[in-house]
Length: 301
Length: 301
Image (cartoon, rainbow over all chains, first blue to last red; front, top):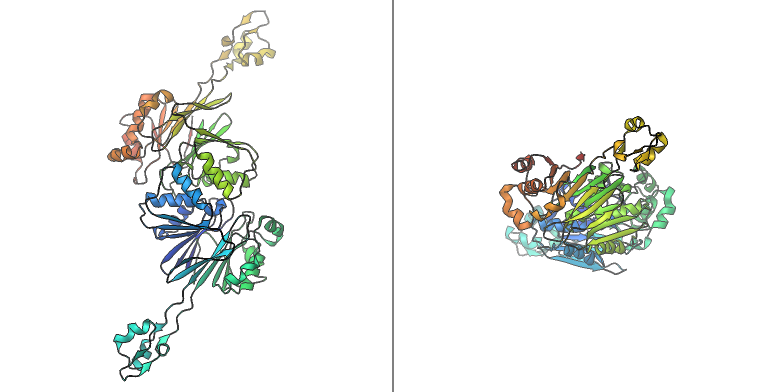
């Protein structure tokens, strides 16, 4: 999985601090997660081949997470896009986008599908043979979902040396790759796992923004390789976090710890802090493996 | 008048080519004209004191002229704005903005007034004792207005030397400034124009974007000091200009010439051209005084 942070700052966009948007590359997919104002410029800036985006996931309808979507959709039209585009987001997103396109008489010349979300329980919203995406119901001032991206279990991998040692003819290798037991040159049935390596563990990514401290999400994100969790405030502003239904860095770390994730990535910083290292310091009081999101930063695992 | 170009490129925003937005400073007003995506960041970048903006004029509802408005309105709220904000634009703009604010439960904490435009004739849409703003009906694929900003005639200026020479007591100077004739120490009535200088001529600015070649606007913009006229295409793409209801550089110059304006400012360039100097060259075949808009460029007159 390859995660590119396009923007990881809260509230108002500034020249050097972009609102939330990120792209996740996984098994041939390029998923766009949230789309604050200016996201299309950030996509160009970081040379993301954004024509490849087919699925956009919008957590909630605050401007810093979705005001860039209508512009991106328009730009796709201007660039002559033909591929379908799927948008997943809270109920109302379809009306907001289509009204604006209608006012500009700017219909898309590609198929644009809206998948409006209303459930307060985690649900499977996308699935193919390689990846699944589930919602993570969050607690914020408006209806909000995080998203859990998970690879499907992969096939076991052929162990060529073991297959040769077991006197299996090369013409059977494809059959082995597909998971079958095969008969060798001597007529013995060779179990698949004797001539294959176990597959890599399926990778996963949990995106949780924006949200108050919400331990109810722990069972959904349990064991995720990477957890992006908003940390709008430091401990000194815990009262503001509570009031605005955001999290402190320490609360994000508490969720990471309870869920036993691999690495916690912090973001959605309030603009009031000059030194972002304090977010790491405060989180590490509870959880060791902490990374700070930065606009343009790439995480690969 | 002081005009700051925040963006002057057509269609899709890019890192170094921003969609249309400009601010006009005149007699204490700071008018925002159009508001493409990213305008709020451009306002910060060029250090415009944008809390002073009280009136926003939107020409039409294509994204590159208005997708930045909802974000700016939201940012004003986050920054604690209390002053009224007036938005002038095509019918539908109110619904587009209020729907998005409603979806995010993000009401403004200042008064937001929409003045929706529908007329196909030029109309006076703003007036105070210093400035008037009229629409300039344009020809585009959707309902579009340009805007004519005009200073009101100013008061004549006191000629202190002449007033003293005419034996007028200083206590009458204020009365002279207000345009009155006054009686001097000898009891003679001194006509106002004998002891004042004529006022500076009222200044004016005509903004015309987006539009096909529309000579019907000439009587409205006649003699404007500065005319910003879109020039999306060069002569070689005149067919595209006609098809998309945009103008070529030469057509913009033809309008400037017919209207006898002071200086023509070109902008709204298509992204296909590397060398913008060609816009000037082609315009100057018809009209000498041509300037090229650039993001961040300031014009003062």
